[in-house]
Length: 171
Length: 459
Image (cartoon, rainbow over all chains, first blue to last red; front, top):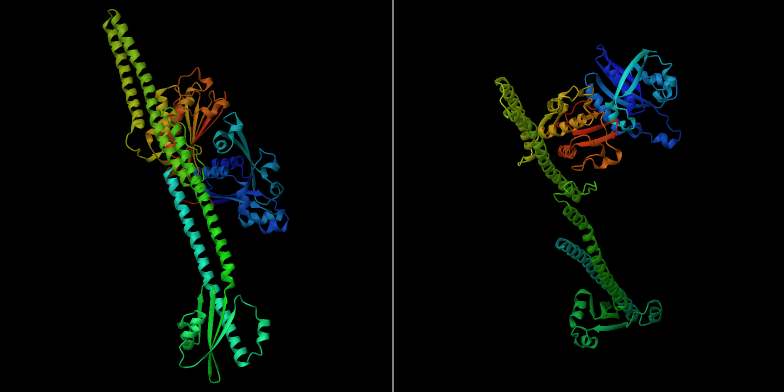
């Protein structure tokens, strides 16, 4: 079956470790995923900003080339499991709006990474995720650097040089 | 200097032509226009004169002179025409040709000018008498303004020509400056300084293409040079070791009489070492093939994961203590994405260099080789836990024969990394080295995928 899932992300490479873990540990009953990497975004109130608001532009500004490249690496690795990946912004500010968003995209599950403090990991979405109606799976991804010098670990290298172990639970 | 001079002259003559054309068109049309205007003016005067003098008999003369501007040297003539007259008398008195008069009789009006005096004549019929009325004046405009205008435009012409010369010279100098710069830079590059490259401004213009092509050529030449050096150093070292054993064993056996078994044993060892020597010679010949290939390098499809397994085998064969782990956790499932266009031997050389360096400088701790594929590149990351590279020496690691200060306890010739970088460059790839002293080194190599297969796109 095809599952639509949402993963809160700030479009940084560190947030991809959750995605990688999900795809790695996927059991055989899910044939493929449609993945939405979602980031909460507060739009400005001024009229000019609202008039000229472009989601694509904001996403382009927030995501780096290295992030997109890492995304492609993961997509190529898990070609079978990944049906599609896209980046999206959630610009609402009520729980109902979030529920509608999930309904419109027919999302089955949300995954969150509990190894970060909740505000940081859920990137402005944490206040909605607690009370949402669809199942939320919490995965604790422990980052263990294989190489002991983290400053050199920026960019795509961090995808290759960190090892992860997981504990998951359903909330 | 010649092409530069040619450019200057071409530019200057083009500007000269354009400005000259401009000047002549303006002067010409100006003259034409002013004549037309003045003639019309005189015609009106002739008609008015005819009306006031002939019709009204001179009663309006005062009004006329009050309201009409006085043209310079204005004179009006009225002639009565009788059928048998020729116009010889009138023509001579005014010093204008007779065809002027005949034209008036035939067409009703005519024009004539001599120097700056203009004549306009009309035929006027009153009751049964025919008159010829001629108004004449000096063309004020022609006399004053036109001369001024001609002078002004001529001055403009000359000064723009001077500017054109200056601009042409500067422009040609500016265009050819990068060319002279490239010539100077190339002079510095010789066989001792083959690692120097031309500066690229990355603005994608023709000079940049030239510099980039030069750099490519230098890459190829340098690789060839360094492969050669590498081969010679490796050859002498690798061949010496088994030969030393053979000589040693043979010497010892011959030093005194021994039992037959001892001789058999010694000969066995000599055979083993000779076979080792044979294998090493084969390996070195293979090395030579990659460096000395006189014909152009042929690229074909190379599968990177297979290459990495081969590299692991090679390095382990050369040094059995090596521990190499190939991490396939991010390797794509589709094998088509693992192919690149390249020369297998050169790539094998490049990667074995990196991997064996990792093993050597970490005293044979585990070296991890990871591979992953993004949309356009294959990314290979080699991680070791060795002595690392001091950060102040990082800019020099690609210099031939450079060895970092902490490598005193390790053997090496300082040729591997520059050779590897050149090989990667030839394959349009990139190499990035990051390191922390005493912690380890990470080498990231990016190579473009051979076929960009249009599959499901990301968005």
